[in-house]
Length: 178
Image (tube, rainbow, N blue to C red; front, side):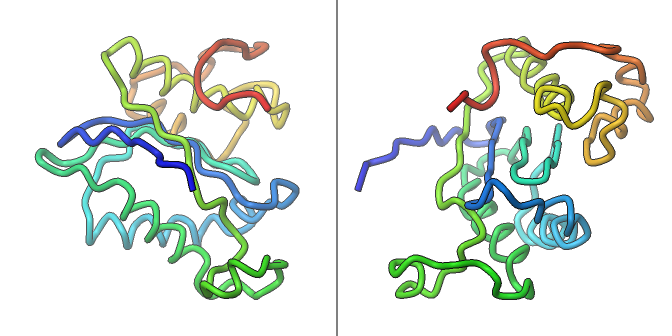
């Protein structure tokens, strides 16, 4: 098994990509209330700030800031995934390893994280969250995707509702192309 090296910076800020195992499903948008409840429960027990978030049918992107002195984002993701999965019907096909471990076949085990280095890096990753539904062809304008904290930032006066207008999303940031 590979030895994954993660950056653990107390009180750090990270960009994440978290993906369903079956990329053909729309579980995340179909069960938004369950995902919200899972995140709310985990945040109540293990506080953190969600600086940006976008939920697509089969994956999500988030920018989080942890409290001072805290480095444990893995336990937060593990518990959000478990809470979301709990109570969903058992529809997925599980491989022998997942069956032996008693795991569901909903989420990819790993996720991608990137330690935010500076304000410019932070802005690029927040904007990537906003633009991602356009990048995936789900909408033509950022404001048309309902499952994004872009709307929260518009309400807070941090960004204009017509940010990016009708655009073609390109750039070397966020998730890697397969």
